[in-house]
Amino acid sequence: MFVPCGDWVPDLTGFTLLMPAVSVGNVGQLAIDLIISTLNMRKIGYFYTDCLVPMVGNNPYATAEDNSTELSTNAEVYSLPARKLVALQLRSIFIKYKSKSFCEKLLSWVQSSGCAKVIVLSSSHSYQRNDLQLRSTPFRYLLTPSVHKRIQNKIESLNWQEMEKSPCIPQMDDSEFCVRVPGGGITKTLYDESCSKEIQMAILLKFVSEGDNIPDALGLVEYLNEWLQIIKPCLQSDDPTTPALPWKIPSSWRLLFGSGLPPALF
Amino acid sequence: MAATFFGEVVKAPCRAGTEDEEEEEEAGRRETPEDREVRRQLARKREVRLLRRQTKTSLEVSLLEKYPCSKFIIAIGNNAVAFLSSFVMNSGVWEEVGCAKLWNEWCRTVDTAHLSPSEAFCVFYHLKSNPLVFGSCPRRNMQITILTCRHVTDYKTSESTGSLPSPFLKALKTQNCKDTACCSLLEQPNIVHGLPAAVLSYCQVWKIPAILYLCYTDVMKLDLITVEAFKPILSSRSLKGLAKNIPQGTEVLKKLMTTNEIQSNIYT
Image 1 (cartoon, rainbow over the protein chains, first blue to last red):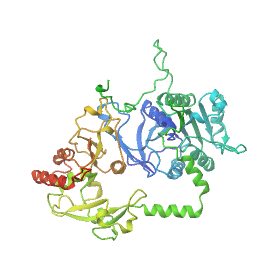
Image 2: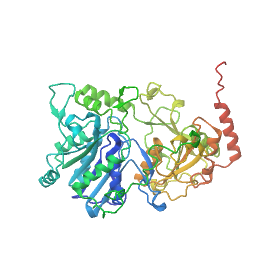
Image 3: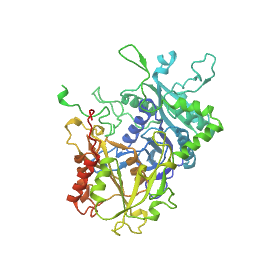
Image 4: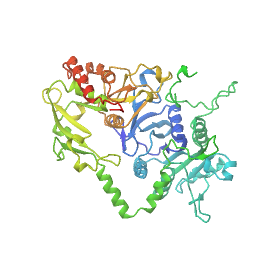
């Protein structure tokens, strides 16, 4: 359930909700981190649930000493009212058999809060691609049928690739075809539930493998940026190593692969 | 999937915990009413039950309604519990008021209905002699202190963990906790999970002042040096005045250590 930070519930009517699916490489979550950090979104509440493994830590987006001591939990909601954006960040994995319950609670909140649409950032196992997918762009999108025609037209104009249907039962030759997102966590459940509840939902995903997934996250936010234009490209500089878009890496993205090494090792 | 240097293709574990999702989807599709009933009964068995002291009867009201308090201290893990027992519960008269029992498939006992009091995983005590610690204050004025340990290799730092002066204390506190911690706060990107995180999350969301003192140590079994690392907390606002006799506490602790020492020698 949504619990606001302050004493009143913020009005999210007409807002776009950005959220990750906890999926392979945690790419969706890394992408949401980049968005919250770059846009300096403000925390407006918590999504308090028993469906996620509990976890706490200090502010992952801290920029200075004085804002580094705010406690963060496993599911928090941030907003940028100027752009009518609200972001839900999930920081831990689902407890077994609780993911469906979470999806139901989440979508029920989406409907009651009046959000106009939901954009899910996700990923799928790159080793499950078929031959055609191996040869094309690694980015895919999916839209629920109730997505506004205006958005459908915009997506079409971007020449994006829709997620292909694949055999429901891969081992069977004459299996029916359906939408599958292997390694996508709750992506498929969210999609199915949104279709039946007539919620406007867009899923943006990338085919990835586990490893250092920061470049994948940067790729996914730039893919999203082609549509939402969250940030504008900064002026070109002469330095070729300057990234095209100024995405701000959160301060908590340190030591992703563990502590320093003992010097005696060498 | 991942290929190894030996030419095998193995299923690589997924950090996002999505391996079970297809299994769950399948199970969901094939679920019969009988399966649902079995699952419901299992969930009921796994519920945490609060019981009155030394009996098997459940508490009729919540513990905090029956014993409202302004300070609630939770120790998780053997070193944290040894610290509280030796230094805090050794001063004053503490009365056992309840216990919590739980069961899940990993417990070696059969089920909660037949657990003896000594098998309780969590026991609640309240200080009879000090009315200041317990008064009829509303929940908002309650301060929660949590003590626990973690292995030093869980601590992320740019130096090597081998060079850290363990054991050492770190703290995390909720927004509403205005007390100064008696040690430095846990820096990013370190996190806490498990029961301490669940308690702290609850307090953060419902705006209850709470502070977690985390001792990073390289000895996870009962250890004198690790327990003594919690000592600075005795002068903090959370535990001030609760430990009357520290030298006596140290003696109690040493006795606790000797009774717990297992004379291990594979030849005896």
